[in-house]
Length: 54
Image (cartoon, rainbow, N blue to C red; front, side, top):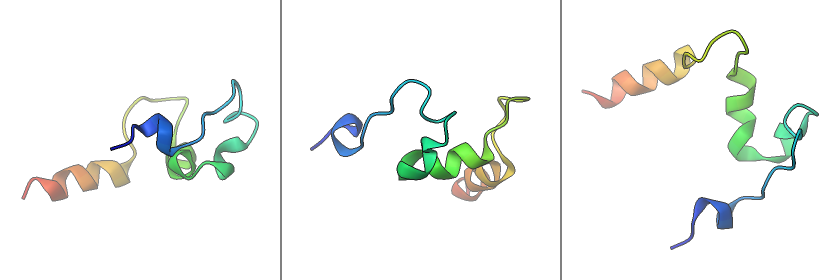
């Protein structure tokens, strides 16, 4: 068993803001859907949540 930290590279401070999300698959998809205007999850995540309930 490995921890998340062992499976993935660490980000350096400011790396996401400098365009580094492309080099990190874990962050790539989520960074594109992030919004500085809201903490609400993107619509695609909301749909996934409801699909798991049934």
